[in-house]
Amino acid sequence: MDIPAIIDTAHMTVSDVASGVVLALHGAQAIPAAFRDKPAPVDVRRAAYARFQDAACRSYAVALYLPEFARMNQRAALALLPGADRMMEVHSEANRVLAEILAATAQIRLVGGTGPAEAMRPVLRGLTGMYGSLPVGTWKWQREAKRPAFEAAEKAFAEALPKFTEASRIDLAYKRRPREHWWQLARPKAPKKADT
Image (cartoon, rainbow, N blue to C red; front, side, top):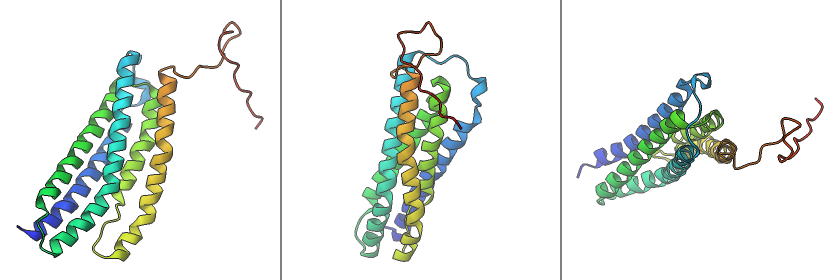
């Protein structure tokens, strides 16, 4: 068992996932909304939005678990305990989550409406910030120095995901749209705009 290789694999897992989330963010920005055609049918969009939310939540869970796992793996490596099997499981899980978030992002870019596609970007930015500032390091001061940036990115992700859900509901017409014309009596009245 090669102890430095196990520690390098833990670092490789974190950097691979971070670069993949960055790739998904830049891919989401690649296609302007003006070039999109009419959105796909409702059931196809619903499946795409659900897939993205599932992938984002699983990616969030992996981001929360990776720092603790890296610390446990470092302790196991220092104590010469076998940990290579578990490291490979975590590495493959991180790769699966990365592949899923990339696929879900591409699917929303293909079939989603402009509202959820725009609301998807802050979710990906939050994940990118989390993976970019994972509190990992050999010493406690190294981990604590990265923690504020990680918590800020975690907060940004937590604020962006409900906005994505709301944009998806509006796109799927789960929320009643306000009146735009006088003959739309069945719709609720539009809220009055505040004077600015």
